[in-house]
Length: 198
Ligand code: IMP
Ligand code: MG
Image (cartoon, rainbow, N blue to C red; front, top):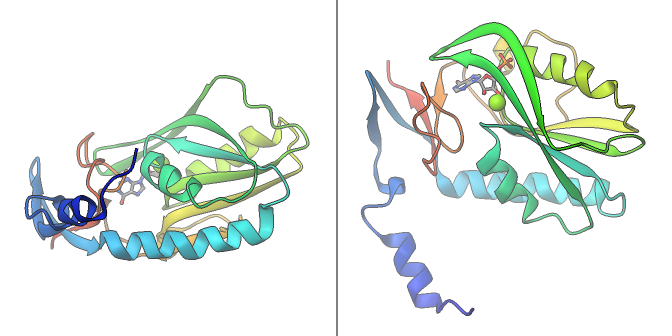
């Protein structure tokens, strides 16, 4: 179906769209825009150019770490030029604004990883605990290689030594929301990344 260009532009200028809201309240907290829709999409273009250069002919397996990475995963993969497969794994470690310290994984279907080039796609790397445990979990399936691609990286909070290969944004060490990231289950649908107001 052809979408007329004028309609497309009008949608993007709609004043009620999230992009026009600078400060929002979610439950008991206020958040303000930190990274705009446009900045996210242009960083995704840059990272996907690097992924294309490194993986176009390798038929990689992209693994989306749910729930947080769903939006980033979908926007990122639209720019991948070669053949690829996708897989989904659910990681649970946060409650409200605190990491519970325990990380659990639940696969959706069978992830055929043996001998494959795997790219783990994350919404955010904070302490790195989730990633560290996920890496150990995935290694059991003997993939050929595992690299990490994340939208956000709280470099100051990072306590692990695993390299974070593809990063869209290094951020402040504050609580972030939107574009997949939640506060107590809410805010994942926002098209921009918000930061907790002081
Ligand atoms: P880590 O194990 O400390 O690296 O935390 C990883 C997971 O915690 C991420 O994949 C997110 O789901 C969640 N998380 C970490 N920081 C934030 C944040 O600022 N906002 C929302 N979720 C976060
Ligand atoms: Mg996550």
